[in-house]
Length: 178
Image 1: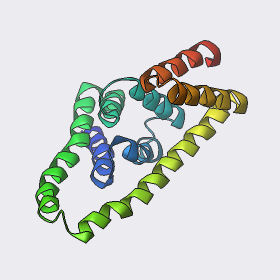
Image 2: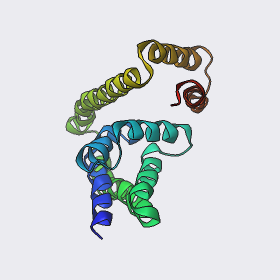
Image 3: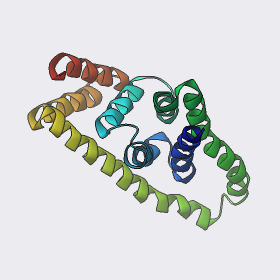
Image 4: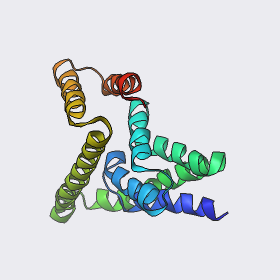
């Protein structure tokens, strides 16, 4: 029974204090799942994130379902998904009326401006963390080459990011697998 409570808390807390959607709360989820509870290694978390990015629908719910299942089976998956969506639903309903009522207030408008730098730092941390993991796993040359190919595919060809992720997964399976 304790494991279900831990799964709930591990996903509820990042989602209740996170602001900015799935990508912004991923470092907070990583802190809980990898750092606090130790359910996954950093590498396993990175692989879960990569796979989650390749599939349609919101990233946080996919990761919650997978990690919850990994930790506590089907019940864990259900609890993790509920814990992921409940904070947003509760806060959205509570805040929507207030924000709509005061939408022209300078304080409400500037609130979003103060949050953006925090999200930027969290995303930067995630990029650096995954880059260092890539260097440790695949080496500097391959990490830079994969990043360069992905950038060209995304920027020059306008290929959908899911296909780029799938190509990266395929490359890793063929050439980097142990």
